[in-house]
Image (cartoon, rainbow, N blue to C red; front, top):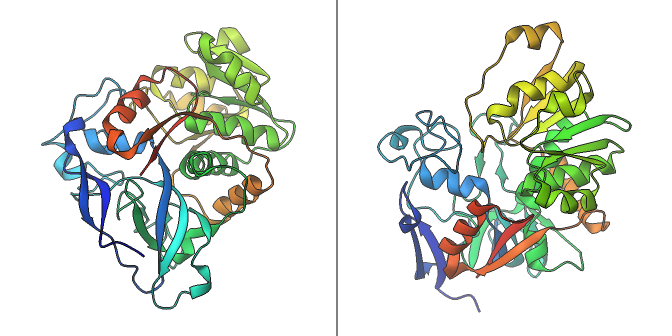
Length: 357
């Protein structure tokens, strides 16, 4: 029987960890027409959770995520990922694995009981990039015992992996597959991956190897072994000069989730006609760009955020084939979300952090 109230974490506003309020009296959502109610088995922590809480998406911020001072007044007008004001209170959590326990009008009752992964991207019916939203951002997400989502965003999954392991996939691996798809990475190419020990970076390493690419991973000396075990053929120390380590014009594609001071070097090592795909800037969002490098080398710069349904379907297929290795470094009870986010920001080890209700 579905209870009337549930445990959940409410983000009350932009600010520090004190803005995360764990409660046990939040009403369980009722699925509307075309929606399903998912009982959450596990939900993973992402950079977006922290970026939203501290107001990092505001254009007033020009520093790395870890160095950014909490924004409150300035983020009030553009603190959401799309440059809009963020609506509070909000239950965050874009990565959700669980089971369907109820359905709204127009959804088959046969779906009740399905074990599912939630595609977090809320797309308009016309498929445009306008008015795109995300579970955990534009509507309540998985940092709760239950979440209501459109039935079209819920994918049945058959896998021996645990809910915790499956919850590590949707956002990170969906972003990674989208980066590689947009950059058109194919067999035999050389791909340089930044932030290779993080959630998205480690996913890019695995997915690029499945495409037959040669993967060079930027990471720390302490995490190099982990990244090599995931499929990278070479690692470069994060503090090293990329041009010195690899040579100019040496890679076909760059997948960057870090940004910051390394940006110029990333373009320098790209071959003529190379592709640079980006979906993160934790080391800093404002970078120098010499336009001569861009146009004289015929480079393509690709911003990659919104994934297509085909990308998520491909991800689910790979999971069910057992082709992907989940990388989970820690599991916390939902009530300990503040500790989980602090651990996440420390980035001391490779892999994802997952919450369980």
